[in-house]
Amino acid sequence: TSDCDYRFSTQVAQQISRERSESSLGSELCCSHEDWHVGECIVRPVCCLVVVDVQNDFITGSLAISNCPAKHNGEEVVEPINRLLDTVEFDCVYYTLDWHPDNHVSFYDNLHLRKLHGTSSVKSGEEARLFDTVVFEGPPVMEQKLWPRHCVQNTWGAKIHENIKIVKKVSPFIYTKGTKPIGGLVLGPYFDNSQNASLNRP
Image (cartoon, rainbow, N blue to C red; front, top):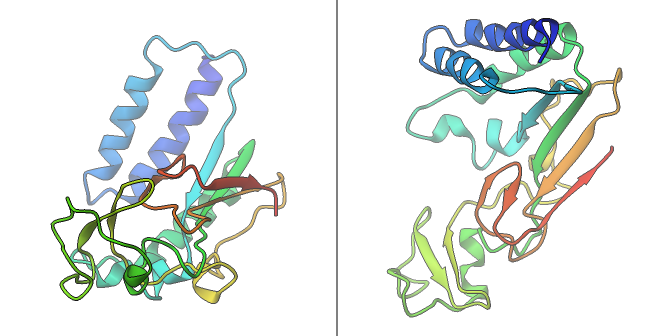
């Protein structure tokens, strides 16, 4: 990696670090950044920003993170993301979205649609509670946490928050995941345990 490329990526890491200076996240990011560059040689570096699941249901909707134990205000991520989009010349920008069908396996109120496997610690739909983890009979046999209905395709809750900027300088990509009924636990923007994800331009 050239000195110029290194300084550029350092600038991004430090910008995020400043945003999170009161927590350990910023310092951890910078440490990870330093470790990542050791011994690396990138011939054609590409600078990308991945905006992960900044959707209405996670901000103020049915699965708002403000209702989680940490009580974070999800809207706080909007301004730093927009500032990065305004000040950093990214080569590409990806927006990831939970994009679930109405009958998605992760929804608590869809529990009655599938049989529980014998290994499930929760033995019946009557016994199950929101946020419990169950095992469905399948196929395939699948362990699944039960979530409130959220980010249903083509609904308000699935839309990107209205104040997030959609870049015009480069052609953005929209990455949807959990797009089919059996697309269960989504662990990150590049993993869906049933491979139900797609990458599109808006």
